[in-house]
Amino acid sequence: MNVPAYNVLAFGLFFGAVVVFVFVFLTLIRSHIRYLKEISKQVQKISNGDLGATIHVRGKDELAELSQNINKMSAQLRTKFDRERELEQLKNELISSVSHDLRTPLTSIVGYLDLIKKRESMDDQTLDNYLYIVDSKANYLTDLIDELFDYTKLTSPDFQLQRNEIDMKRLLQQVIGEYEPILTREGIEIQTNFACEWYAFIDVEKMVRVFQNLLENAKKYSEKPSVLEVNQEIDEDSLVISFSNSINISEKLEVEKLFDRFYRGDESRTNVNGSGLGLAIAKQIIQLHQGEIRAERQHNKLTFSIKLPPNTRKP
Image 1 (cartoon, rainbow, N blue to C red):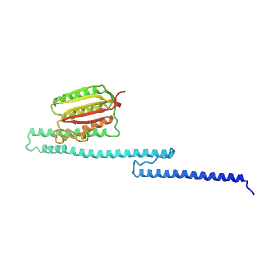
Image 2: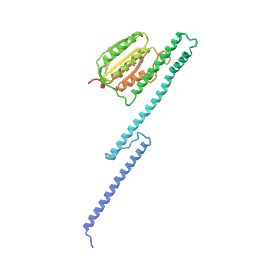
Image 3: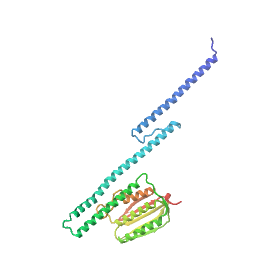
Image 4: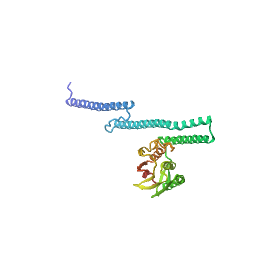
């Protein structure tokens, strides 16, 4: 039986279309399979610890969206891992530093208490001196533990500032007013220059801590008699507060390390008590406010400058 020529032609066209469809389909599938294998390979690398590994994003289909999400996840895991490693390193450094700082006063306390218990050939004056030393060392330990607790809390990823609106000029005047009698007794005169008004949304309690730490630092290390200059001004829409005074400290002072934990500037000054955490705490508080704090030395004058960004100012 003869098949009409048009039927043969139609069948040929249909068969050719099927072949082309299958070829195109297999080509596309093969491309997607290769892409899926590449995605699987990179995911395997990430699961094996290669955090931060990325997948080349191709096209704009569902696989491309999947690749973007995996890249985002990988970057987040890397950031989290680096942060956890940094915190672990900080914890180890703190433990090491605290162990060293606790050991010295504890050794003194134990030694003097042992002498007091023996009471051999000890007059009342000697006993009072020993008790005074034990008391001062115990107070130092208490201050160290309190500051260590505060620093640990401030560096926690979960810590949140409690912001309120405050007049920075009035706040600074209040803190200085509380410290002025103390500094005056030490032979330190305070001169202020508040050239601007600045209402800010800040954590008032924490900012007061910053000012107190800087004033306490001036009390410990200023030349006596001397003048402590405190200025407040606006610089390019940012608030700048500076504390500047003549210091009585070794030429070996490393300004860039002043904000490091447990750095005291001059280890030879054993008569100056301090945990070495005060400036580190101040820096952490300012950074939590997205601000900057830095130290600059010119000859024997040391200036601490705090810069608060425009976003802390009341709209």
